[in-house]
Length: 416
Image (spheres, helix red, strand yellow):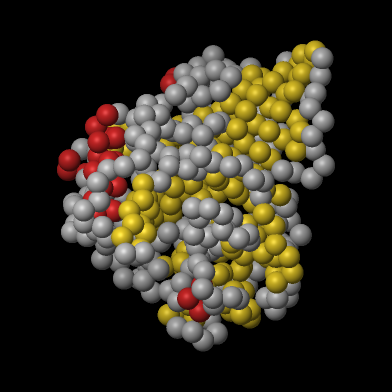
């Protein structure tokens, strides 16, 4: 792999693509500039727009997609774990069973059942594979963390505090430590919970210490309804947020999504990834829908509530989500122009529920190496959620035309 290097006053320029591909192979065509003049962190800057012709696509290699009448497989899934040997562990929410699939998609075992005894589960609030190959599954409804072998056999469980639950609520790192996602600070003004972070567990489930990511204050937009001492609050669909994730080497990666900047709080010298981003507008029709959605939501508790507060944002935050994958790369889901959802594909409106969306965004990710180098942009088909990646291989949660979940393995084309 060859890179053109230029060094001037502590700044290094590295092309954001590998080598010289064949003339018909698209490539990112963008350069990353590394600024080493800051004492506290290295800054990686990437500018420019990736043309549509150079956006990478995905090719499906494997799909596990049960049909609606298949009672022998999973029926509703919100996440899954991929083992270091390529096996896939899928928790089925209705039956509380775990389906173990071989790397080729063949079903190997079905373990567990609904309940509160050993090897029984009531919820899946996150599953990770530890350094020694065991699986850790957080079951908040049973207030415990269960451990399973690679084959899915129940080994033991730890009691963990009840009263709080979240998805993807258990993490690990390269040392094999186990962490729970919990509020780790007192609530600030306008907050119901404190800042989210990690609590490190000792063997048996005892709390050792807590970790909190960088404080990147976000100017929050909230619409509030109050009556008789009760308060309801909600925010716009396209509002800036504080996002963080946990790197497997043991540090936080975070962002205030109002700007395209990512803080990599690695030990020693940190890294800041800075990317210019053209503003993505929110269409007037989508802003009107969002205002109606918020009004209906707040009037369920305060029937005479009238619109107050700032206008619905006219521009989307550049970052929608952060994913850290097993190869150390950072996948950033970026905002894209809204497109109307065809009426035949829209969810029906239901009494007492929020208005169903009438617009959607294309799923596009920009990918950075652990060094901060820009690698390229990848476009996903609709109804797919990234679960993990390793090089050019992706594991995604997909849904078919009927909304049924499936597990897929894709390959980025052309590769990075």
